[in-house]
Image (cartoon, rainbow, N blue to C red; front, side):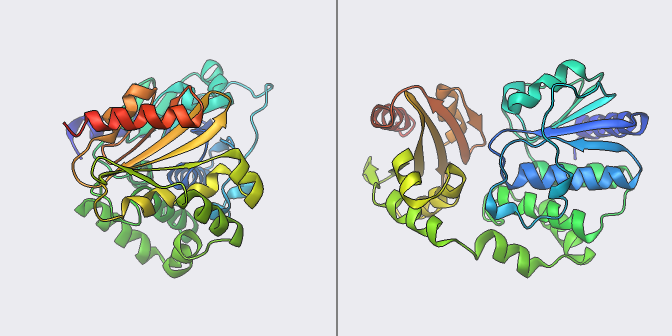
Length: 325
């Protein structure tokens, strides 16, 4: 924990203590770090009698519907009152908030908490540390700094946040500090076995059918160092799934032995394709994603290409190839 982060952590703690009514929101297309961090912080702040409203970032993927506290979420409404503090989690910029972005205009103070190197520091207080594995890891330090007891429900949400954003502790963003935090969460008394089954050991038949269809589109380029798969709206309709059900496919593809960069293209709208990339050892995919209005981490990033999926494939493959030179 460097001096700048410690200074901003102290500022965040002071502002939370001064605030009574608080909104919390995170990015659209929610993931495990997003949801786990939001719920953990919400439940923690309620312990010190804060009036906390976590705003729903979108439909909760089925993989995370086992988490405690989901009933605390509320939908954004135009009649929401102004508050002393709006806490934004895991969002590199304001646009990632979707409709919840409007809350920035009615909040007296903005606390921006994130671990993405591409964060634009849009808050009044920016608790951003790109060396931490996840936003969940930062939330752990914040809760500890507030001297709030971490109970099994909070610990379950934090474990989920950290585990999912580290690929179940496989990614190189995991540090000794990460493991020490996880050890502390386990000591609290979480059901680690059940969490891991929910996250990694349980997959619906529909999602399995989608995996099969997506993997059938696999193409390899650049001496098999680049792997591309895609998912279309038709695939989702045929299998009765949603885009969130593609989670896990890209990591599976990256595991192919010669592959350094894996990319999944997701058909979104006409002339709009979302891309997610993962690298194995030496390619910075966040640099690649920056060419497509995106960003993220060195080994995991995403963006958007405003072309149909077939043209998008050619565009992204050619761009990835440039980074092998």
